[in-house]
Image (cartoon, rainbow, N blue to C red; front, side, top):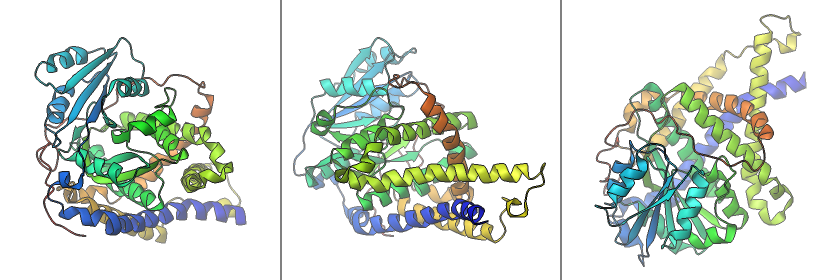
Length: 434
């Protein structure tokens, strides 16, 4: 009897516990770190020096996006930077378009790789030829806030052991319900998690779509690993297990394209889940190293989430079996919530409301999606359960050392402008406190 009670309680209360932990962590981070920066009129004033920054853009089949991306990058609010685009064996017109763009954009350099070798190899190649000590790495379909370089760069001045700074991705594709729901995820889930983990001092992963790195740190750890499905998670653990710090900068806004089909979303999340399992497997030695003790909480959080996924899957399976088989009374359960539904719904509303209040100055139209988002945390946990259950065996049977190559993702329906206004003109001068 006690075993099934523990199983049910764990499956129900763990997401609720994490939701309130993330809300408390997000508010704490805002109050101690984020709030004071809202009054800064010009982020360039944060910098004592303005070193050369290399903006690195790995590209694979980006003909629909690369022109807009390069145009936007050429107008960043920073005096000294270069743009390096790596055409990683694209099969469309990406290479030809990049060559044409070099004629009108003097900051742009292009590297062509004969065949698709994967994002990690593309990043490594660009890092070796980059001239800057600080590398701003981004996806080939992302649009950056004009002030993103100074917002990220000042963290490296503040701490000589800062190895990376992760930015704040915001969803740009909002033409479908699935796209609007992901607006809530990047705010109420990912944004709150990043803030909470930063309070603790260790972050599970930088955002692969936008992050800045210190070259010296990358040299020390051996750059990106070509066999990891999620190079962003792996590089985060590589840095932190070598005692480099990772910061989160919410003002470093980056507008991204996300899947707007269920098949595209499933493929993306399955890859994320497999990448997480890969990294946990690779760095399991941190459990036994006292010097790596600050990684234990991040490690435990992920392992517990895997256990939760299998617990929830078991409960759903028991519930379905109960329709065809007469089970013992203690196992006659229902997944349809009663009073628990009120608690879940209240928590979802609070979580979304908290995240929107924190992110409203970075995404000025976020509140118009509130109606669609209040139940997204439930959908997030169900999606996490399904992908995690499938990812664990799929990761363990994957051949070790296999190169992780590009696969063109579902990017949804493009929009020509970011939801908050012009893509390159960030409204960063308002003084709005929580």
